[in-house]
Length: 227
Image 1 (tube, rainbow, N blue to C red):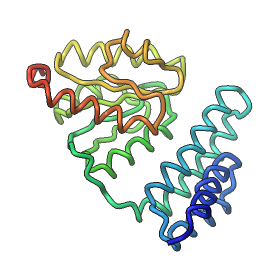
Image 2 (tube, one colour):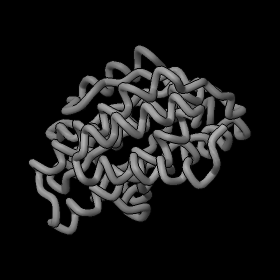
Image 3 (cartoon, one colour):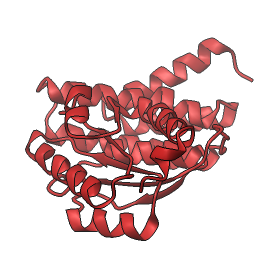
Image 4 (cartoon, rainbow, N blue to C red):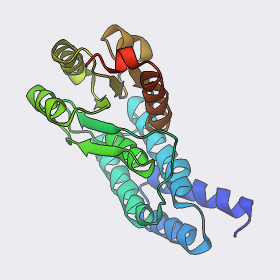
């Protein structure tokens, strides 16, 4: 096993490579992580993910724009491609079926894809509808799959109202549905006002928020059986 100092340096290298759209750097750091036994999940969630979250912050502050976002995403996915095959599934104490997607009108799916991986690593059964998903698709797939949790994402203020519409229709048709939302323009207050059961401010906190929500549901059979 490598020393903690070098491990921290590698995590920082992964983060910086994503921020600086350095594909060679991310490949070099990811390969060293694999060769030296750094936990692949840690490399992803403490290296790559903080990098793309910083990119999101730079985008919000108009330091980065769409071209930079695309370059950073390419580097992120290159790192994920190398590391994800080495990630071991773990038991988080609860299992569930998750339906997820980015609402109609929004094609930004980086955060959603990271959250998807976090769920899969934690042994959840994940059904990913992708991006730019119409309302009717969410409704149809919810009826078909009967998931424990629906996760909705949007990165744009222009599609926030579409998320509200999806939540409202899901709740109207399925009173027991549990919805968790996330995305740059959202806040916990907005999520609650729109009727969401859970909110994650970023990809890193999505798994814990989902586990907390599902544990609460399992401990309250009356609520859980309402749908």
